[in-house]
Structures are given as C-alpha cells and as structure tokens.
Image (tube, each protein chain N blue to C red):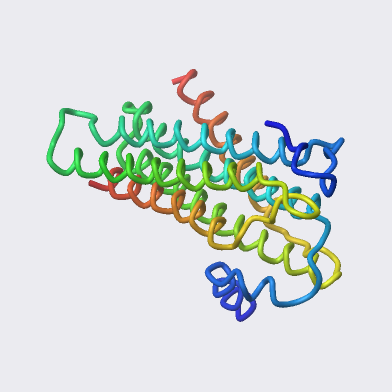
Length: 130
Length: 113
C-alpha cells in the first residue's frame, strides 16, 4: 500500500522517474508503452461494456442491471489505474536494471471475466427453460 | 510515417517499434471513441434533458482530451532523437488514464440517476 502511494506520486512527477538509473533501450520503453495501451484498451472495453449493459438490457431487473453496469465500470477504473501503475513500476525496474515486477492482476481479471461468463450462461439457460 | 531522414544518427528500426506504438495509440483512440459514443447514447437516452446534455458534453470533452493526448504522443513518436524517439512521459500516461476514469465516473452517474 505504501508502495502504491509512492507510485501514485510518480504518475505526476516524470522527472523523478528519469532521475534514477540509466535510460533503457528505447525499444523496451516503447514495448512497455504498448502494454500500457493494451491494458487501457481493456479498461475502455470494460467501461463500454458497462454502458452497453445499461443500454441494451432493458428487460433485466433494475437491481441486476445497475449492479452489473456498476461492476463493469468499477472493473474498468481498476484496470486503468492498474495500467498506469504497472507502467510506472516497469519503467522504474528497467531504469534500475531490476527484474520486471510480477502481478496477480491478470489472473484476477481473468477469473472475474470467467465468473461473469458462467453466470451469463446460467441466466440464459434458466430463461430458456422458464 | 518515415523515421529515416533525420541524419545518420538514426537508422530505420527493422522492428518498426515507433510505428507499432503509433498504431497502438490509434487503436486506443478508437476504443475511447466507442466508449464515448456509448456514453453519449446513454446520456441522451429517453429524450434530451439538461443533465443528459451536460453529461454528454463532458464525455465529448473527455474524448477530445484523449484525442489531444494521443495526437501529441504520435507527433513525439515521429521525432527522431538520438537513439530513437523519447519514452512516454508519466504525465501523458496519467492523463490518458484519467480520461478513462472520468468516463467511468460519468457512466456511474448516468446509471444511478
């Protein structure tokens, strides 16, 4: 948590990232940037999914619809904040010549998506029978 | 876009790294466009109200802001400094992220109201 707070400060203070270590090969920096953008796209897709649930599932009960939409929007926020945080951590690790940081976020996100998908299958089957 | 031609210090990268990064920004801009359009549709759903128009305007501004960030970064990528284009600055990355977060905040407000 303390690490996270320090990283948040770095989001707004690029000069502090540049202050330490050596500038890595630009190709590694660009690869890190593309990874960041891929995560940002994932976040935008989750946010778009939140809007889509609210708009295109009018038959759903209010509680379910709002809950699902808010969950997707929250996942999008989490994903985008994590994207920039991971980018900062990778950038610092590359400058210091350390190993790249590991993360359990991809596993958590995959599990969440899998759970939602299974829930949707159950909903479709139950409604098809009933 | 040609990355060659800025002197002998820079030879074209056979891995096309700046081009790939530029296209990644383009894809992300496209994603943000889709998200902003869905936000606009949600905001103006059920007839234009004052609050709906206001939120829609905010979403438009956010989209334009993201477009500006992406455009500035793409222009920076086209520059050929010594040893490749400069790395993404933390301020740019944070700005792009805040766009997404603000869009989600708009969405939460729309869904609850």
